[in-house]
Image (cartoon, rainbow, N blue to C red; front, side, top):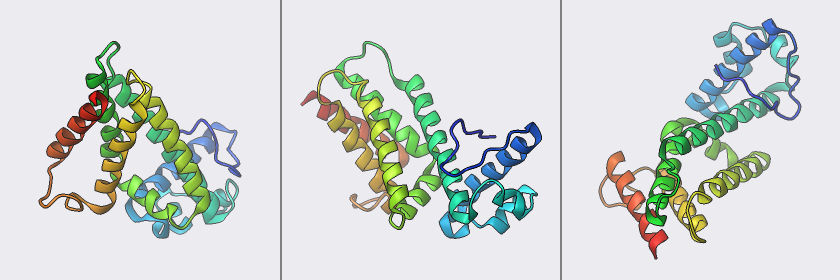
Length: 203
């Protein structure tokens, strides 16, 4: 169960334990539903049906569908931050060479995309129609990439992680054949992008 530490703008967080549990269930269902069906499929009626709550219990916490989505979006941002931190713990090695650190940073970025493809695809799609979401998502992405770039010695870390991020984004949105003549497997993609990161860092 995902419990957010920072409420979304306009979200009226419950105070009682039982209410918090119910709201956490609503948020978990909302996250799953958005990842499955995108903005159009995130409806209060379906969230109520899956979470076993009534519409007034949602309207007491947020202002309609837009408020519900802002709360769900905040949960997804936090989940992505947690995934990035976990990937850093797994892959980043203190004292690694520049090339190895770049490879490890690439694995962190790839790991974030691998963990949440459906949700990220839905967020990217919605961002094209929601300037506020685009701004918040962009700020979160810049912050994440700056943190990951800081694990690479020297001054080229930002260029490395931006290149890796762009590769992951293109694959997520357009599929494995957008820039490649043949489908790349996930393993082939990972090896190629990790190699690219090493070359860029060593240039």
